[in-house]
Length: 79
Image 1 (cartoon, rainbow, N blue to C red):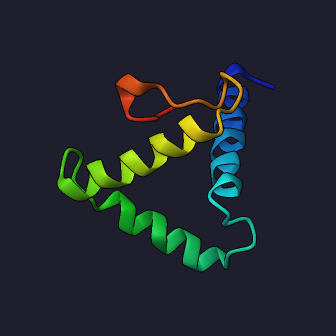
Image 2 (cartoon, rainbow, N blue to C red):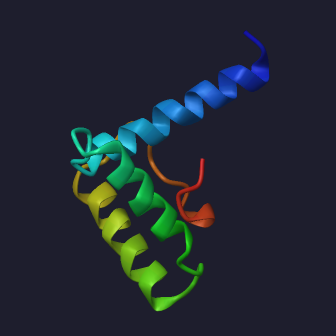
């Protein structure tokens, strides 16, 4: 497996973990994709973006994951 494919597989694993953590593992896939597309339309730094980010950060504070899954505070949680 190439390094690029390995990184892509790792990213998918991490993102899947976030879906499970959010309680959406059993959600309809079309609903989940729609929710993510809608979230992607929120401007970074907007009030709504900051509100949702704060919810996510609080979740990580309440129940930390291993270091590989914890968000990078500087990048807003991007892998």
